[in-house]
Image 1 (cartoon, helix red, strand yellow):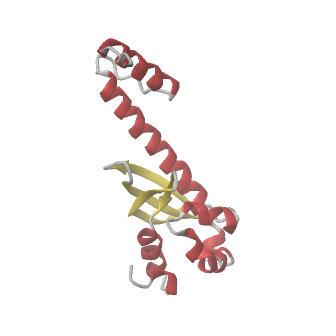
Image 2 (cartoon, rainbow, N blue to C red):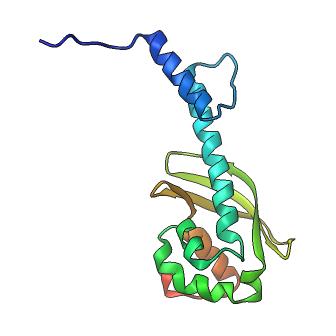
Length: 159
């Protein structure tokens, strides 16, 4: 019969605290390791969402890279290619204003779309989704922007 070993609560907290510090903990003083870990996870997700949205909405990002930052990216290759050739698409960028309601797989994003550095669409509401380990622009968010500019694509049918 094998002897059952288990970590003490103190050891578990030490391991959790170490993991938090390795991941760049936000340093919630006096909080339990569990809440510090959750705060770090959320902070890391917010940071990743902001970075990934900047890559996706950068008009200079190659299409074969941008498609990795939109949910179900393969079905948007054609429209991404077309968009990048337009004045709107090639000069676009994003400023993420806030990321809220972060769960394990979704988050709400408020952002501005900029054209040549000037706010063109302020305070847009969108959704980020975690797909294949990457925080991506939800296809519903992208399709909403396309509809604002009057662009129709089969890829957005049913969204």
